[in-house]
Image (tube, rainbow, N blue to C red):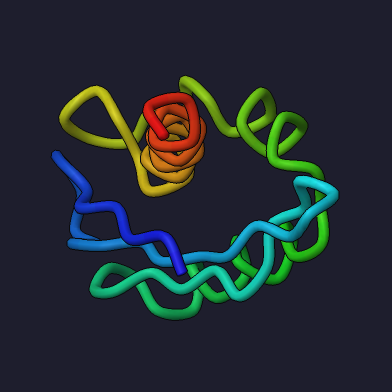
Length: 85
């Protein structure tokens, strides 16, 4: 599981897994609007992380970000963590 601490949103944390084909699984937002975030998690389940990142990047709510935008940032942080290994 990869854990990302959000910034500027009601959700505080995002956890997820990425399989060997770079597909995202088991996305869970901690905090935030439960129904909406459960919906986002189901919509991205099994999708390629690059596709998810490009689709959600730049969606704004308040504080010039959103929970979907934070998921795109979480995916980038996951990619950065792989590059640093």
